[in-house]
Image (cartoon, rainbow, N blue to C red; front, side):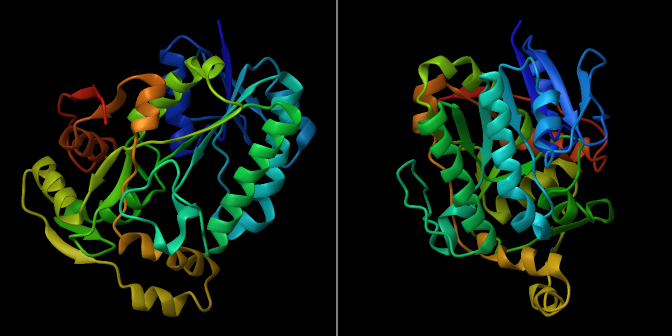
Length: 324
């Protein structure tokens, strides 16, 4: 039985990844600062480690052939923690000869992100967080070349789905849906890239199974669901079985608050992603793993809302595995 250590197992994606690998027959080690990852099967081993403590992280990942790196400090802490944590994860992966699995994002492409991102699209971030992400990925590529630590990076859009909160989908879009209000952060006709977490987690399982066939530093794009605000609202309307009222995000007010509130400053820095259309090309991923897991968007949105308790129950999901 193969073993994977999932770092940050209380996080949105890591929690879904732990469940997906467990369902696929892996031995799963859930690593958190508290030693208590919520909502996981009793068979999943729980271990404690602070990712800033290199030796503790190495001990907590002992026995793992794969390490899923779901570490994601608060935006305001990225400058302090992201790169040191990355160094520690690389040390743990090297110590155990483990394959490093990492979820990338679209921050690397900056404000000129194209409408359709390809594997060869140039990365030219201007934001603080985008530049940090580029440096982090350069670290992983360097360790692949110098130390032989394999990294498989899967880049995706905004997360949604599952019971763990903390995304734009639950904090903003669905936040007032119980009162009949759909809140959207950008123009309703602009395409936005989304990643339904059960599909994304299953894709990491598929990539892990192909690790021996991939390059030491392998990067892929997860196509997910590309939806405009109007399309997402139609799916939410159908899931709620009612026409929802529209509301927007008061960006001018948030930007004023950003002058004194650091977290608002970090959130506002990324507001451009709601104004610039973008989608991710999945052809390289499809070539690597075969048909990419893709739940039909209406079913995915309805399930995501049910996970949050906004709607009463899940419809039957229709997960397709279709070429993209």
